Image 1 (cartoon, rainbow, N blue to C red):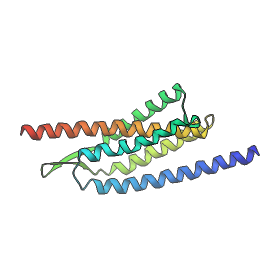
Image 2 (spheres, one colour):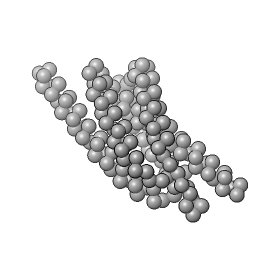
Image 3 (tube, rainbow, N blue to C red):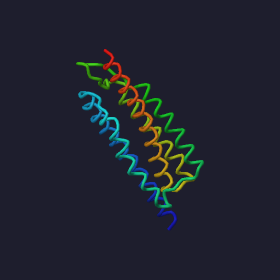
Length: 165
């Protein structure tokens, strides 16, 4: 019975990893389309706000994390966000701020995704699937939250600069 459950966990890990890669490819295409429209406050704020509803998973004890897991996850999410912040480039067109498409973005996104899958495998050796789910939600939320905060700062600086000019 235990062997059967372990094989199911391995299958679920494989399915989740393939799903993450498919979602990463979708994000690349969505991001490509988004770079054709100006950056707005709504576009910056909505993704983390909508994503925050996922925190409801922590209502259930199965997904709750220890303080050590929370600290590790926040640290890794912060490191990953720095990569996104550094590689996000902006440009001004027709007095509007745009996120410029970079050729490195798909490579970086896939690299972060592969690192995430590797970390998920490493953590799964002595962590329950619920805790892993909770950890990787928190990791993604921290990463996207910090990145979007940097975009918000850039957007506000641009708007202040426009008001002065």
